[in-house]
Image 1 (cartoon, rainbow, N blue to C red):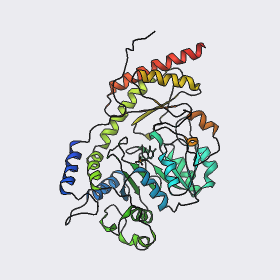
Image 2 (cartoon, rainbow, N blue to C red):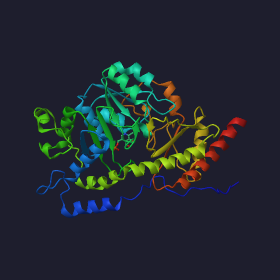
Image 3 (cartoon, rainbow, N blue to C red):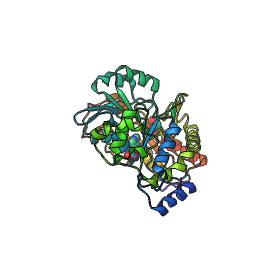
Image 4 (tube, rainbow, N blue to C red):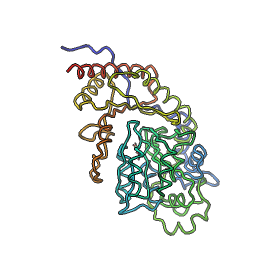
Length: 404
Ligand SMILES: Cc1ncc(COP(=O)(O)O)c(C=O)c1O
């Protein structure tokens, strides 16, 4: 029988908002003068890229900032600046996206995966047990879930493990009032289209460490023009480093920087809008039998540009049924438990270039993670409708399971 689908969502899960007019105007100004390269300035002009770095450093409270070609490039640069290279190991999350282990592999190192908890953050017990296996943790705040950063830093400091934060999903977020990215030696951000500011591709790296940032600036390809940077260590910091550090070009250009600067000025407003969408979904899904919402502690100042929930211990066929039913009603859900990596979802066991022992506790959680984008083109009413659809389909499949 062909049932008529009454509740169908018509929005697009991949449609971001347009670039604000101020960003378009600034981009046109750069196109009109043609000086797109960050070191191509006229007279006493300050490059858009240098201004962006200064503004992002000030927004996060970091001493130094470097604008680069992608979030992945920011991570490889941070790893290299920490001396990580061929044959080294790096601790990282089992629940993250492919660019994170990819950044570790890019410098010739091997990831050691650390498990995930039901709160979708790194498992601190598993981390404690593995801290003696590496000198660096590349901590991914995956999907914006921030672990107890005080506890994590205490563990890592005691073991003398350097922390690099992957803040691709936490630009604008904080733990206990301290911006995400300000706990570790480096904070790495992405400005790729689906992130909190959008330049198509791009990345930002922050640090308070003069030696580390001098290395990062040299690595990014500064042609000995490091004195053109403003959110940078003083020239003395480069005295030796400039001879020792290879140029591995990955600069950001002035066009992207021009697009980003007005978006940074608006970041707080956008974060508040994301969280309103998140709360609307959370309210609509609360107390749905079989569906577990993710606990968000009061100390976590999150920015919810996506939404996750758990169908914990469900048979894979039932999860697939929920996904198919939601898809038929216009709601696109992604699943971290699929047998094959697809789209943006993959897991530690998908990255076969970095073999790992199985992690049964994490496998159970990964098998239940359902993930959804929350573009700002959605309204809170849209999110109420999406919640209504998910709730109805999860409930229907859950009822079938219970009565089977
Ligand atoms: C968790 C996470 N970290 C890092 C990155 C890397 O960002 P980029 O795509 O800018 O290299 C991404 C991008 O998808 C990501 O999702």
